[in-house]
Amino acid sequence: MSLDSATRSAPVERAAALATTIAAGIQPSMDRGYLVDASVEALRASGLFELLVPQSLGGAEAGAHAGLDVIAEISHQDGAAGWSLMAGMVLSGIAGSLLEQSAVEEMFASGGNAICAGQVAPRGTAIPEGGGYRLSGTFSFGSGSRHAGWMFGGFREMRDGKPAKLENGLPNVLGACVPQSRATLSDNWDVLGLMGTGSYDFSIQDELVESAFTFPLFTARPQRGGSFYRLGVHGLTAIGHSGFAMGVGRRALDELARLAPTKKRIGKDLLIELPTFHRDFAEIEARYRAACAYVRHIFTELERAAASDDVTLALRAECRLATTLIVDTAAEASLLAYRQAGSDGLRNGSAIQRCFRDAHAATQHVFTDEKSMIDAAQVLLGVAPPSLIL
View: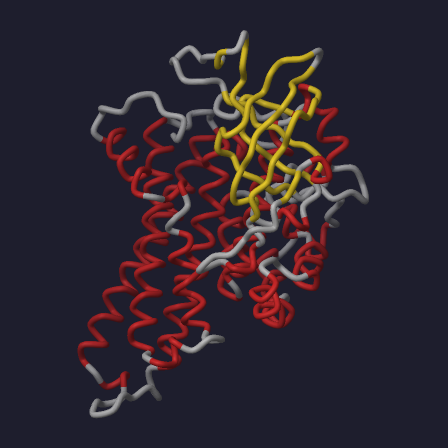
């Protein structure tokens, strides 16, 4: 794959140009349970899947703010498309920056499909064998796995039948990639929200891979690319979740503002005329903007720290805190929009209803559940134990 100099410029404009194609694919993707081919091909042709991939591999290496903006733009168009893009974009960036050279030469070969899907959670095992590892594991939430070329999983390294340990006593977890053809997809995505993401369960069983296709998930140093990649696995993942929430939250508020001048319930004034609506809208708008500002601030601080190789535990904790805050705020914005929309939000096909379901589905992800708030608080209070999450 490659991105020419013209394609590398204005990634948000390229994302915005896909709006008609993405909109046409919303309902078919929901009906099928995965992002339809036309939407996938539009995203692939735009080069957006490669936005966070190192330049040495043909990617844009665009940085945190470009990632946030592009994922937010596509998520504003459709949450499922934005979620599918962010999964492939982030995991491809992680693999491209952290895997050894022989692995990335195969994965990112010209004309190949370097899009990654999978789950970082350490639900598999890796047993050393020869010059590699024998991998087995069953995973969930492989968003975009139908159109991915590679599947990514987290595997606990096993030695003599026991988990290998890091110096801090935590298990050594390997990130590993295998071709999608060597994984079994379950085709079992049947959910309330994010229906079009094809986030299937999948398994990788008894697969022998070279060590070049693995890396220590929580201690690896970038093999290529600039200082941006020192944000690490969790920093890149936070870009995806934050950008998604920014886009869906903005769409919910935009749709509510569009509806307000004409929405009227029996016995009440137009929604736009109600002081209580003005109050509630202003409050959630302010909270949404504040959460977005916090996200942008912390990623500016992270990239500044990464440039001097000084990304601290406190910064990583704040990154998770900001990400969880914007996810929660987007869900609150979509709830207000849904409740104020009345039957307009109730009916299938409503953008407000879709935002409500997608935003609340996002709150269930382990990366942004209440545990992330607890972990961040323990760091800020100076009582944090060793953690795989931060």
